[in-house]
Image 1 (spheres, rainbow over the protein chains, first blue to last red):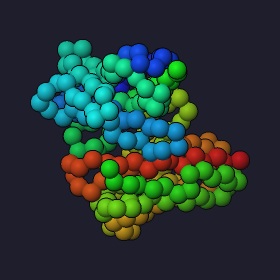
Image 2 (image 1 turned 60 degrees about the vertical axis):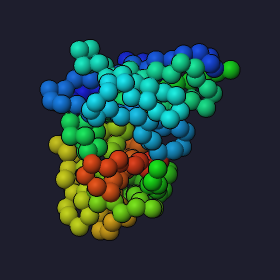
Image 3 (image 1 turned 180 degrees about the vertical axis):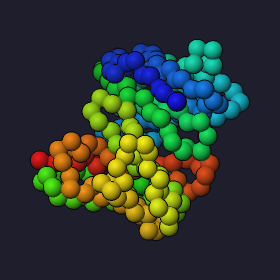
Length: 114
Length: 115
């Protein structure tokens, strides 16, 4: 069975500082990995995904994540965060790439302060 | 991205009553909709998958007679929590996708409190 572990429930950081949100997964089959962001009172939005190809994937707002098969990780990073990045971030794994049966982690709340 | 709307965003109901939650795809036709449940401090758990015009497929451990799912049109799926009890209090989230390998878009969720 697949599972996702997000060890940090909350990550406080100052504006313009770098941040890394950790995600580790377990799966016995091919994996497809996703990061979702949830802003207050909004639905989850897809931030970025790894399906195949380059192990480094980027989002349009400066986040990136690297698929590391040997470490079974898909950590999310941003070199300089903004106040507006404050949100809940969920890592998810799927075994079919079709957004079917996503298995989510427990989420990490990123708190950016001035 | 496409918009998925859930209604209501919050609902409080008395124990023993039934509650219906709607999930609508506003600007695309959703062949498949998913219903998730999230307990505090826990991850989203898939409850069931529904394809338009077909019976929903429930995940193991989810009572299909308690959580009735209807996907009668390509833009609307409903989740009815029947004979609700306090332990059914949770955050319910739907997502919808247009095709097999297309992105699934999420609604904003519904906070259900059973008193």
